Amino acid sequence: MQRRVTAELLDDDLGTPAELADSLHDLSHINDWFGGTRTTTRLLRGVAGNSGATDLSLLEIGAGLGHVPLAAQRRLARNGLTLRVTLLDRRWTHLARNSVPAVSGDAMRLPFRDGAFDLVSCSLFAHHFSPESLPHMCKEALRVARRAVVINDLIRSRLHLFLAQLTLPMFRNHITRHDGIASVRAAYTVAEMKLLLRQVPAQNAEFSRHFLFRMGVVLWK
Image (tube, rainbow, N blue to C red; front, side, top):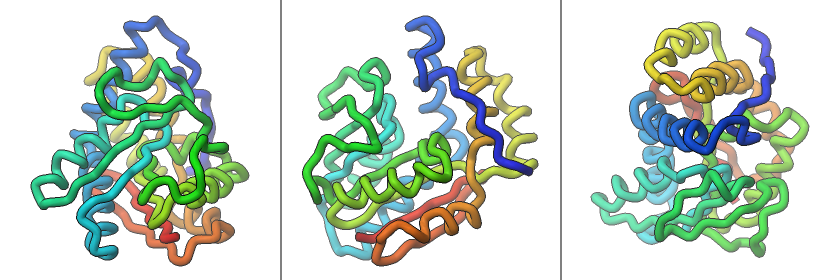
């Protein structure tokens, strides 16, 4: 199945404020039900275990409401791990209005100094980048990270697309239905991701497969 890129409606706020807000909340449910939250939690637990850290600062890029890192924060707290989360999104309107630090900014030019956070994470975001720009985004994330960059994204396949087409009618929001299919078509395979990230100056790169066509990537600083 060839990768095919279709513009996602949520990226450019192509909907009413109510439709956009509903779609952001749908993404929270999708990540909880279909493995996204579980994948990020597992990756962060592994990074903390390998580094021996019990208190980590994390920047989530392309964050939206930040549901995934905040859900992971609550789950990891049960194991005695403190995760201090900062959210970043290109569009201020996507960010949650709560007590979590949030910044509007460009993932290709992060508005932070070198090594500002222990970890930089992105969930359901890597497929938004072209093969040419994805390595540059990862390099910028590594610049800001002290320990590692954690990526949680979809794996493209015909079976995944078929399952997405079956399940997305559960959601009434037309933005969610459109963007869900577009995301699967634009996602990378694990082999493609390995090839693209070979040019990123990480000390080590770990790739893993997770529940319901999720991939995990850890780029160690």
